[in-house]
Length: 214
Image (tube, rainbow, N blue to C red):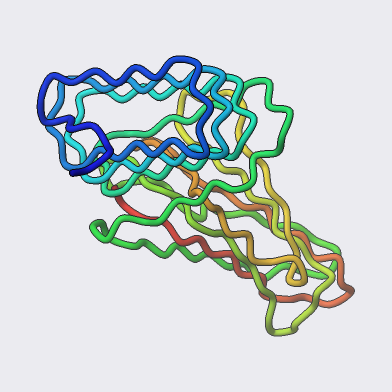
């Protein structure tokens, strides 16, 4: 008999002031209107919460005052996942997004021939997919003639109504820039790039982006 609660019925799990080596919570393939998991100030050695292919209307997980490690994984969720870290005394060790198998991968490329000591600009990506996309990576390179004394300055506008754009800069030595998790861009988002050639001779400078449709 499993030592974990059966969530197929109207079941409540209430553990008060327990001293545990670990607290496992496993919820698999449930169809629920909402699901709340509230773990307050436990002295558990570690807490692992795994949520697999759930069709939950809303999901709220609160872990308050935990002195041990906390591991949370979301697998095959169809809705959005928001994670907030507040007043942490320990570090946030990692946050990794694994791309869904569905959805098309988009590659955007723009290049300019920039004179020595000069600038040029272009639109790298203008979202015309009709929906949101995920920006996975940005990179740049120079050729004809190669120089590492150049720079690409990207402006990522995640939506048309966002006042503060995200500005990123790189050269051939520091490229590429990979986002993990990816940057969500709305249906009106776009990416522009400013090319800067600090070499004495002209060079073709290219910028590219990899995105994923949702």
